Length: 300
Ligand code: CP
Ligand code: NVA
Image (cartoon, rainbow, N blue to C red; front, side, top):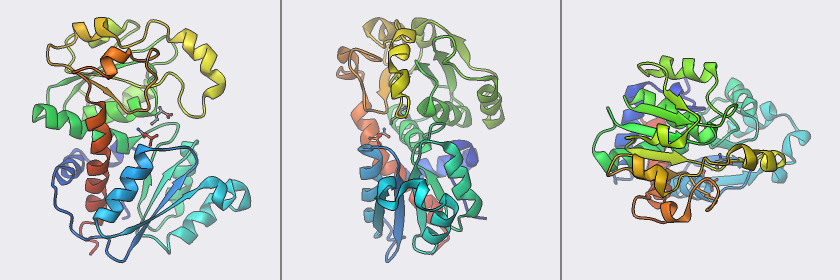
């Protein structure tokens, strides 16, 4: 069966650990020699595009990146036809889409692995890098506590799944209406969480004692129209020195980037000594290389 990755719970915990182990391995077997990886983008990207293209090249392959406007969006032909055509060209397909349903449509007809490069619902490649960064920091993830402050969005959902699958504890602070849904919580428990996460409407309660404090923008790509309302709703949810002060003494601050200094995070935190945001960004490369190696293991 073709292994797709729309979110981390498409993997078993053992497969997730295997990807992290491969990501930590500096060797670069030429699994992709003479092959291509198709990378489709409906939204802007710095880290995802560059880390994916670089990882493909490191394994001897060639990335073929294309934006939706270059192929006429979904109006010129259906995503099903696009995917069936691309399945004959590439070894793997990655896609960054507005609507997660587009990825599901791709999976339904693809003969090659489809990897989610960010949708409105999930960002599993980011979570792989986040887990890798925390594992490098502490040596092990099991038993550590991660706090999420702000919108329980695509990045949060995938991170919480990864935490549940690796034996971490999750604490969440979101404004009313922006936290996990009952469906999200059921999914975390199915993925391995030992119960619902701690949830609060106060950042300092969720951050208390945490080993890592994560946040992300208040308005994600595609939510620009909601920006003013979200600015208001997220007042008081900035990760600042007072939030970091209640976390564990050696706590790290994490953010997928891009960051908005003075909104979801204070400049002194994102640019301060506890910040690991650049390590995280660099780990996107190693995580994607590990994922490619995992997907290609046994294929050559
Ligand atoms: N963190 C992340 O996915 O960054 P880009 O949107 O720049 O790819
Ligand atoms: N939540 C953000 C993440 C960007 C990497 C977005 O979807 O825009």
